[in-house]
Image (tube, rainbow, N blue to C red; front, side, top):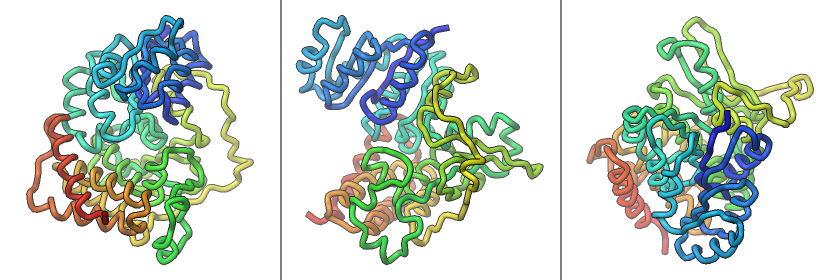
Length: 386
């Protein structure tokens, strides 16, 4: 049976990997709409290649360029927030939500429709507005399937038993580019060094989050909402080879693990056709040739952002929203050369502490989440040198 697909964030790394999956299965996946950010030419090329019916650019100023690039294709187009919402709301069986940052909150919310599946790659939907987002998915009967390799591995591993029998669900981390560096050497790291991820090819901001291990902290918060597991039953394990992506330790002592080569097309294919696996023309995992898999504990002394994220998860309420907002401002300042590497965690900790006494409740709506997000960003901006 052919399933229709809309791709939010079609020109990013996840979107490009999704295009590869679609092109390998044109008879099983048909693209309804594609959404991009600012690059009209790249979005038009993607729309043409995938045979989409509609293309929407978030940047309203690029509307004319997109229309021109699609001239003669028969593909409809639009630009601006209304066009992005239109794309998200068009009839489709599956919506891949891969717009990064808080910019993806509104489009992902618009994609929530009864009986629909959301292949979720937008962290902010769960980190910033997890309770509100998951409540709405339950109300509408929307199925959420994680695209991140770690959460996708956990999703598959958790099918081996009951949630109540889970002692620990563990996501893995490569350890980033600074896994073996001393704290002193890390302190002097440049943005270019922090952006050099040893395994994955991602955007600059995500690469920095990988270097600080904040990305693993955010993934713990995501896992809490996705799988209904408390902070005490969630953990991180450093695994440089990036072959084991998630593990579930059960009450009887057994462990179920999700393994795959580090290729985002694997979890994407699983999320798009859950329970009906696609045949993907990808290299197969050969454990004998790899020979050895290694694991170690995450060092929160050298990577304090992970500890900050764990604390935000335990605190609950709006603290994960505040943590994420402060982190985005601090990371941007580091990338611009305004602050040092460890100033990222220092700024985030200061902002979180400044809000802790208010005990803000978890955002009840996406609008609430965006309001808290902006307030926390303003607080973080005050800490950045001009």
